[in-house]
Length: 242
Length: 102
Image (tube, rainbow over all chains, first blue to last red; front, side, top):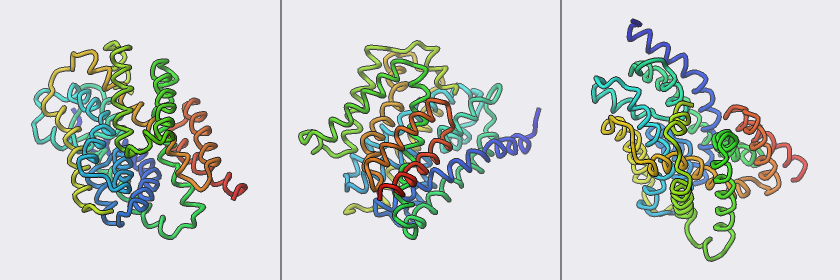
């Protein structure tokens, strides 16, 4: 049985590649925060507290549009709905004896990548493994966001323009591999592109704030797919285990 | 921005934390409802796809550089490249296109 310290160090080691990836991607997020009118401190604080790429990006977009607090809350819940699924899966990975304070702390760091390494450890997840990974990976996210705001202020327009697509690139890299494997997801992604384009370009729909459009389209398309093509238990588990 | 940024920040952090921590603390059994499971399974892909397109087209100085980045991203992701690689090469694509276009 490995000691707590060894388990923590193992987590730290697995957190290193996550940290470097976060650092690069969150620079783009910092630029989005800057465009939304947030200061360096506010953007960094948002990343320290939230640690969510799509969630923060969606929130910054809504802040930029001057959305109401309620719109932001609903948008945040939809953009981060996948963490609900991941946390459900992770709850199965914890020993039933895991104390509440551990559950409360592990919950803070359920990101796509930390979830990914946490579910891949053999047997029950030791809380100290997750803490090790979080201690290395999460500062990379906050530091990158901070740097993004600063760079956004000094970099030439050409560079800011290039960095602005980084986060979209990451989104594409998240939804394309499952779309390749699962035909239904592939069709759903194509439909999402088409519906989103129509909603953005047709004046009647374009009048709806963009965050609200995202919520409506996500709920409608996902619910439709869930009713028409409910997945088998093994499929969702396979997706959770990635 | 008319509203208080700190309330926005606390709202996004609070909602995100609740989403992450509630299942870990409350749900100790797997979700059985098939439609709900399926809905949760599809949501992340749909929401990311909706947020990406057509918004990416307005993210850069030129619609064409952004469209090129999108095509590059889809191709690289299709070939199984990592999030990091796809993300960086998207930025490089926009940079190179705009060197020529603008």
